[in-house]
Image 1 (spheres, helix red, strand yellow):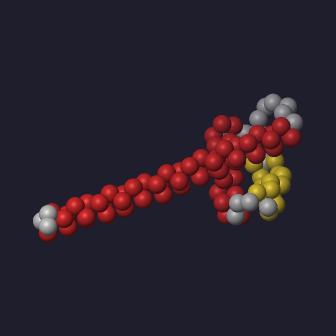
Image 2 (cartoon, helix red, strand yellow):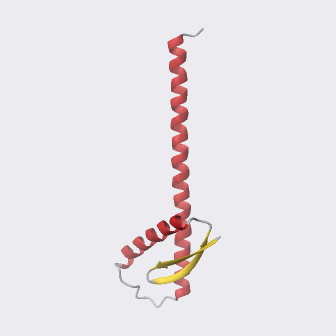
Image 3 (cartoon, helix red, strand yellow):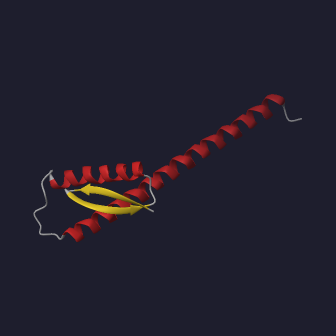
Amino acid sequence: MQSHEITIGNEKFTLKSDGSPLHVEKLVAEIQKRYDVVTNNKPPRSAQSPQAFKSMAIVALMLLDELQELKNSYEISTGKSIDFARHISDRIDTILSNGFE
């Protein structure tokens, strides 16, 4: 497990993750982008504790990571299904072109 120094919403903290630095960086960038939309690039007005904010950010990163894994899994499954369909189609074409001997 690696430690990653990250910043979200001008709050800096350390995140421990098995993910690569690039993967974590992409997740953080996406969370920051969404955070900026919600806050209109202004700090939140609430007197939220830094620990509560960090907890929310970590939960958001975990959810985004799970979503990304599901998307990757879907793309792999879809690719395998297409490959299988092509294989079966090729087999059918071969059988039909050679007759039912």
